[in-house]
Image (cartoon, rainbow, N blue to C red; front, side, top):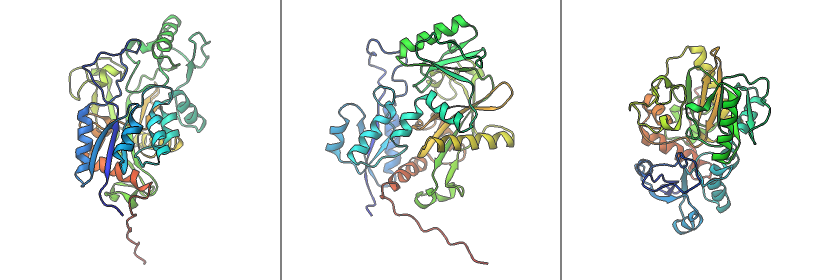
Length: 362
């Protein structure tokens, strides 16, 4: 098999120097990546001998792919809009027959839709807070939703549409906030019972046959998955206390106003077991592939409730949650990125399976 590949890194780039177009939310494009992240990804991939090229995931992408003809794409593209924007690039790559990393079309389409994701989890008995989607804003509030409530866009990530006003304590605040979200983000508002407890995020890497294709088979447990150390997010020091907002996520780790990041989190063994189990089930039930990160928060009684899953987790070294988790257990950034690459490539027959040692007979 071909040993070295031409790898195209696909992403949408954040350009803070350019004014935002009229009519878009104030935090539009917050989940786009800085060029420094792309440079880090390319450098990591090139450490194993591959050649890389960066291709902006804009409307010229189909033509750029035709011109560059990559062997595989390392996809972190967020998409350009619509109700399933994170599925746009995977769908294009599927259509063109180009291998790529990470989850496929349907999973990326569902995972950005927080309401649909919660419905799937709830129906399979994973714990979520009571929730309701508001499409026009004046729907009767379901009786199981008790104040305080939390209101956010149903189909955004990176804390978009989330600030201290997201917590509402009475009817008037609920209606005003729901209407603001619907009008500003041109999508439904997700309303759920506010969870006052500790917040965690849990990363998952691998799949059933990961040991056969990984450069680091010792990372993976018998079921083929690697559970990263649990990361706790301490909101008490955040610029938006109690809320993991876009404003708090935008700050550097350790900067004033940023949340506290504690990894591995200090949790009791029983809670740790639950958090790891729920993150893996959340990953599996949505059909996620190779990499994901699930956010979980405790309710007022200390019970874990799933918030959302990120099937395109950020990969900025020393900053993104998943990278902080990997670093906490001594996994080098280069090794993390290469394992994601090779797991993706193996799905397309680009990596030969390794021979695992035969168990000794008694």
